Length: 72
Image (cartoon, rainbow, N blue to C red; front, top):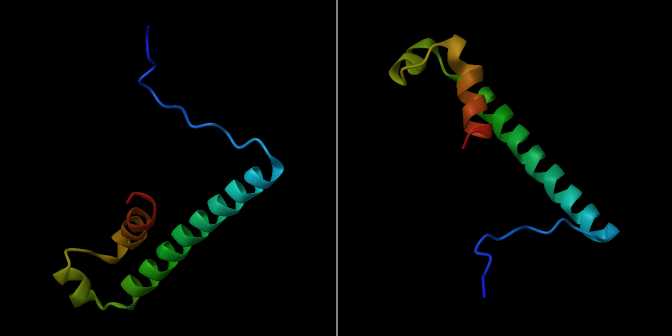
């Protein structure tokens, strides 16, 4: 007898399950956008000396904020 060792995630079948999945996805995306905006705002509030202490310059801020929100 053979057993399948891989697990598969079943797609939501009912309308309520699909709606719940949609709401969860939208909340996760909103949280990531909020993290991006807050991080970027806080980095922009630093002066040039403080950014240099962190090893950053102004041209790097959007990338750093993006990485904090979407690549973690």
